[in-house]
Image 1: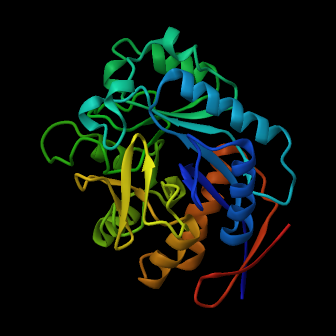
Image 2 (image 1 turned 180 degrees about the vertical axis):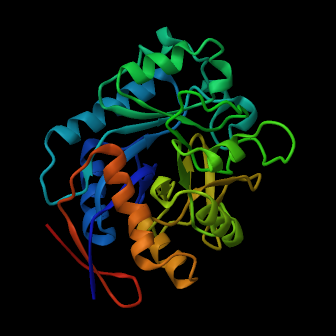
Length: 309
């Protein structure tokens, strides 16, 4: 049996049937408890999708309400990850295009809140850099994602590397190449062997400083749910062979949580167990200046045996 600190989920849209864009405060509290005791999650950043400004604002208030009264023996809300609405419609994935907004500080101020800690944007629309500068002055980590931009100036991290971004190219500028070769920029990686192939996961680990790799789940509410389909982001999402897709077979988020991803990459020998924990816990704690409270005890097969405060 192995003992580690708790996992930190910095990109997660829901789990156990709970959709962070639609849930009540009570459902979010229930989900946070399950994340802790079933999946060893110490801290998480509820991730909000592109939607109307009114809906985003409403869910920010729900998340704030829950955060204000959380107990220690639950997965604690570290902040909100806002994935949209300031993205590129040409790389929208399953985000609803009708709600995408331009990079306008005055629009952002309509939903601005101190609990927002990460924002995924398409920086190619921030021609003079004012939007990124404003976010950073206010303590928000800026992530390139759902973007065809190549410039990483002022960017803290890249959202789900390789997914919903410009392709790798050996000629000209590429955000993928820039992210892999930058010593400063963190990269999120969905190591579920679906969003990113095993060989590309291996390439990333060999090229990128392990201290700068943040394994994420990008989990949807169908993760650890008995349901095989649900409405998410205004459309029906289906679970097929552990893959989540819409009716057009566009890949959505993941059906795995980070505890499952630890097992996936260690079972396949892609990462040693201690390195998998580094990329799901230690790096995130350093990046966000978070202290761990949970202790997670793992079986020899790298599944969770027990979680204690």
